[in-house]
Length: 391
Image 1 (cartoon, rainbow, N blue to C red):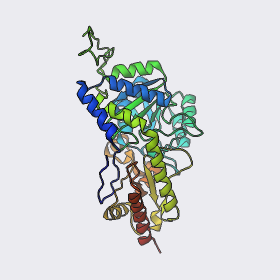
Image 2 (image 1 turned 90 degrees about the vertical axis):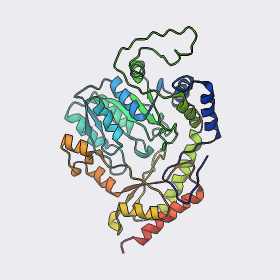
Image 3 (image 1 turned 60 degrees about the horizontal axis):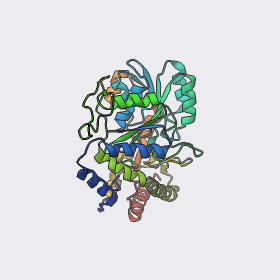
Image 4 (image 1 turned 45 degrees about the vertical axis):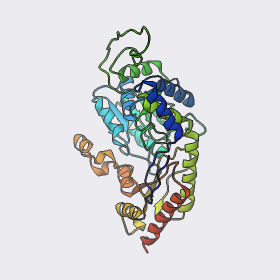
């Protein structure tokens, strides 16, 4: 089911008749909230990724919060994270009254700089590290895990962009090799349930704590108490939990999308390959790294502003005028008033993140992007570069 217009949108979910049938099946079942569909989605995702435990949640934000809480992050703890990320990565740290410790990104990618991370870890107690795989390009998680182990920190991977990419050298699915990992199924992600996410881990104790906290701190599954024969209505609240469960309506969509993950990935790779081929000779732009397998959730350009007569915002405006949607990922969190004021941060504190933000934009890349739309995007980018190249 695709909607075609004269404007090429930045993102568009790829949903079809199988997703529609899955939703209708749940609607007709008489059970809409968390139940059998969510359980099956967890099982199928667990098998796909080869992990011991998986919990379907209402969002990746919820999953990150649960993971940090289950791994023992407490008030006053410090959690290392890049400022070059969406608000959720740092806000969940504050949910626990812990403090984010920002670490700049690598010049060649959009991910946390492991050399800078090592300096932060060596400089003081850090309870957890949260690497964010920006755009679906996997972080150097092997090195991050080694550093975290050396300095006594746990690792929670923000893998919101990464599914179903693998770590380099045919490693595990990116996001599954650390103490916990969290995936997003938001409307723009590589597979979608509209809203939703999945927390994965290998430690039973972490999974059990997250499961209790996922639904009001109740000590046992209660989803079927309304319809199971002879099911006891009794339960115990053992912690002040949250409301982070994923309903069956969304889980049913996720099960179909999971079966299509390889198909979607192949199309994203084909689109990325075309962009790389068609734009490699444009001296006004810097292409994203393509030296390792990735999900291609985003196709991120850095503009070489010294070679252009317009800035990043002007470039985006001209793309829009040419009928092409785009976006910016991300305005660094150390520029946001909350973090800037609370922690006394300056724009220059994280120079690579700042420079990247000022030069960066994202092009459309999603399975439903038709070849003719792809060529329109390529033509628009090349035209703007030619028109505004410095002589």
